[in-house]
Image (tube, rainbow, N blue to C red):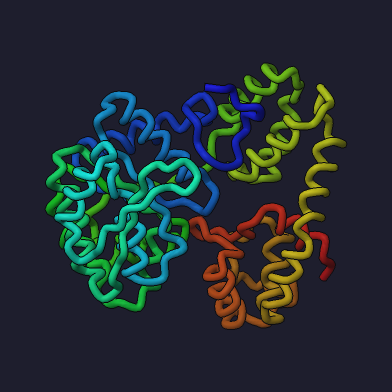
Length: 376
């Protein structure tokens, strides 16, 4: 395989060489799946859930190439029919080598759909697609799970942004999924999500179908020293010098948040100067914030006055432990506890602020820098 030009990946997964640590989390995830436990994986967006899942799948398939691993992101789905269609299209034909017979086998299970064969217009290779009937979504879902079960293969399915199912207009989607999943001993599931309040409601509320049937994993930031060793290794291979002090500065500014760390390190690795200095770091951060200013202004303009003021206050504080404390409310001239709580709920739902325990901070690190530049 051709070596990656920039080892600090911002998107995608290649192999463990380009994946920083998470050894304990990977082993824990694999152990849970292999022992028949469903896993709920939660963390703020861009903390590295997808990378962890794909790293676990990589090791599972290295150990047993016959296993089938599927990663499905349902963020873009709006209803049960969308979900079922995405699930079926992701799995179709992956449990068999491509052939008319293989897809015919699949088609015997998907009686509620129509299998359509065609040729790729560029290279003539065979293609197959499924024509779905939205009114048959529940039947199609059962047929997909029946197909997985009869394949006889060990299957691992990760459904990302799982909290999206709470937005579906159909009632009973959670109960429907559980009714099939609990009878699939050879199919192992990971439900991951970034909206922790919704994920907790799905899996921790006694009123919900998925109450306590999964093992919960919360993904936090990577340890600073571990991340530095990873960064230093690749910087040295690329002929770059990054001091420990400067790395610590990056880590503290980005709160150790994986995607923002990777994005900064990617930019620094790609520049032509061998020795990375604080001046270069500040220049790149300023450029990134400037490039996103129009987007930040648009988002900001769509907020109410109370939401704007609270968002700026949280950004200036960096982290807020006591959101209703009189000292915090008075310092930023907020309009009282009730207004703060109403604005906070809206900011969390818009994913502009995220909550970790009792602490609140602005979700987007670069947006936080932009907000800090706005005077009160």
